[in-house]
Amino acid sequence: MEMRVNLACPDITEAEIEAVCQVLRTPNLSLGPKVREFEQGFEEYIGVKHAISVNSGTSGLYLCARAMGWGPGDEILVTPFTFICSVTVPMMVGATPVFVDIDPVTMNMDPSKIEEKITERTKAIIPVEVFGNPAGIDKICEIAEKHNLTVLEDSCEALGSTLDGRKIGTFGKMSAFAFYPNKQMTTGEGGVVLTDDDDLAELCVSMRNQGRGRGGGWLAHQRLGFNYRLSDINCALGIVQLSRIEEFIEKRAKVAAMYLQLLGDDERLIVPKAPENSRMSWFVFVPRLTENYTQEQRNTLLKKMLDRGIQVSNYFPPVHLQPFIAEEFGCKEGDMPVTDSVCKGTIALPFHNNLSASDVELVCNELKSCLDEI
Image 1 (spheres, rainbow, N blue to C red):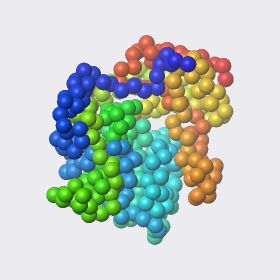
Image 2: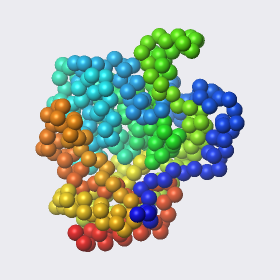
Image 3: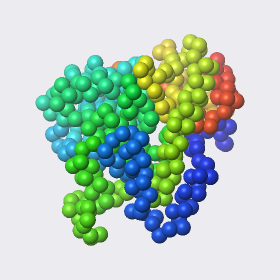
Image 4: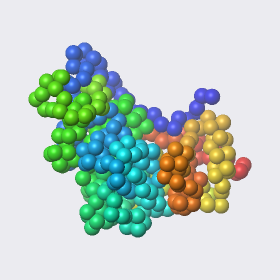
């Protein structure tokens, strides 16, 4: 059925359309000047030395893992409450993901549970700023430094977030952002790797372009590489979107505030809140049912909302219980009790830059009505 309110929607204006059309009028659809212009914009916005554009956040994280030399025998600490690539990227290079349970309030990796998972094989940590929430990344980095571990920051959901005035994407040795159409900004598909390390940047630039080296010929390949390039078409879109990022963050904060006002006093729900000393760049708005509700009741609620034309989802199912991961690493329900509990109650509500007050009110009224029925 047609949705009355969609879960996500990109914010595209005539400026983005014209920027893309301008590229289409040139011979430089890929490997042209818009790629570097986009990357320089990110270097300036985040405040890092190197930005390397790629075709997805997943590709970006994978290049980081390869550049940092992860491989068989290495253990990488990961969160079970995330989009799956945070966990599968270590697997792609032959390393072993080791799950660390989450904080029940922030839904980020719980810093207090990290040290018990560190062994002589632990090489790195992949913290995720889930839904744009930066809480705990500073503490995770402190633990990593104490144990001489590398931090690969999965910032794919947190463009523009800050903690104590420091921008997300600058805490780790490397970081990655993603620009799928439901993110704060979009390039259609795309991502970017960030680092201050010259050597790591050089490796990523080469590997994203079939292993070519700087200054080498088109058929000169220095190492194993991939085609993870982002085209000038995508970058032209991204340049305009990045120029509007503060506008986007403000719009999304207003939508979140409307939801908080309408749902904050409903005792059946636990609503997300930005941590102190931070600016949270909202990726999605995900309240969850209180613990007296079952997962089956949550699923019934989601179906009722969809039947009423309100597009909702269950961000996220626990990654450690995805069948192929559970089978490979012997994970089972109960291993990550906080994650298991949180995942049973999450309700991702419609959320995007231009969601109107009337649509937010409609969503909240339907949510409350559906709750009354279960």
